[in-house]
Every structure is written in structure tokens, then in C-alpha cells.
Amino acid sequence: SSTKDKTLAPRWNEVFEFEFEEGMAATDKPLLKCTCQDHDRFSAPDFMGYCEVNVRKAEHRRVRDWFDLKPRPEKPDEKVSGQLELVVHWWHNPA
Image (cartoon, rainbow, N blue to C red; front, side):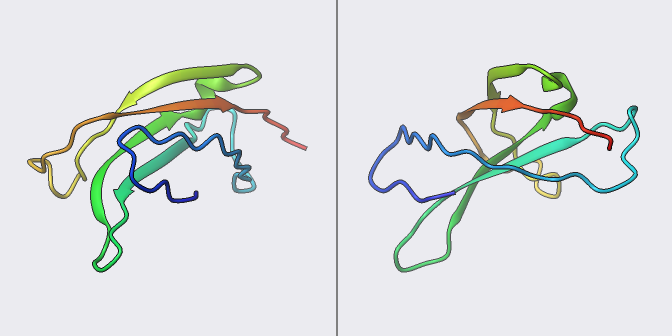
């Protein structure tokens, strides 16, 4: 996604399309993983948190929800805070 400078409440309003791997079964649990980082001009980005969305909950319908940011699994004591609002719509086409 694009970078939003000098804001604590960024709005992206961007649309992304992804294809799932061939052979995905109807019982599979597809996950959308979103990672948030701040952008530093002169140093590496800082991890702010991530969230996972079970895309199957949005199958053939639009879902809009807030997701709590979580620490990385390998650093469970990492301090993170905030939420990410996402709108997800999934059309499953097993053609």
C-alpha cells in the first residue's frame, strides 16, 4: 500500500486483489495477514503490529470490521497497540 505521512489516523482507501493457490478446498481457512509499520525517512521501518482476517467470513458478502493489532508470534511480549479497519469481500470461484 502507499505510505501516509504525518498522520496518526491514516486512510488508505485502496483496493487489492489476490489469487489463492490452486487446489484450495472448500474447507480451507484462507487468511489475509496485514502488517502495519511506521515509515522512517532515515532508518528502517518500525513494526507496529499485525492482524489476520479469516477471509471465508467474507465469502460472497462484504465485511467491514476493526481488527486489533497483535505482536509477532516470535515476540509475544512486544508492545503493540491500535486497530486496523478493513473491508473485505471474497468471491470464491473454484473454476
